[in-house]
Image (cartoon, rainbow, N blue to C red):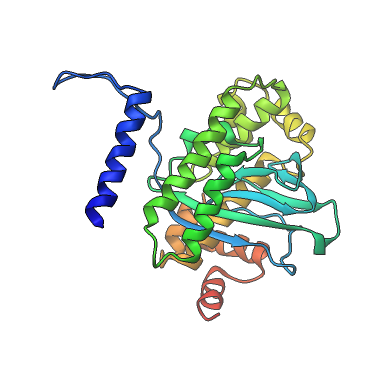
Length: 296
């Protein structure tokens, strides 16, 4: 029976080749199919929102998130940009992007699926084209999402590679679709996006309004105006502070990094100044926050 099944499989391959012949190559040749990508997803998690989940708070994460609206409608605020979403729409949220949700329907009629993951080298540039765009999953994407759900539900019986490959196919498919579109850009939004990207990539360094303006060859007042036009409720200083405190919270909750080292990574030369600022923002000292989280 096993041999017969193998023969059937080989016959099927031969039939395909008969209809679509491949060129016969010399033993040594160059060329072939190459994917323009250097991106390895890992630590993939899938979850569905509950009816009690708070969706209006501003959030920021160190993971990448594919969010698919299952029911209802909302407006996503992503780094101050408004993205209206309805059932079947999808958005890709990148690490350190501020996002919040404004519901456009009753809470009980709203739900979403979240696929969250990290990249092995923490390099997300391969899919930067997806940032801040409303995405529309097609049949191929839906099939791959279904494959990931089944894989996650029965991960003890399935290989993790199939989930990784399915996620990569979704991302690559959406990237191809966006590249085929002609997307107009607004110069105000474009500058705002580039400044925000620069801050997200360099918030652990010394940053000021003046050196940000110098990097983009504009005046500090122009930077202020761009943030005001984006209607994000943020200033460059607030964005830097939020990113630094989010990093501090992540390090306190998930590592044993000393507070003095966390302070330096967050732009504070003096750990006591950092602790005071952290307590003003979070209501407790860094050590108290770490102890509270570890005892939950």
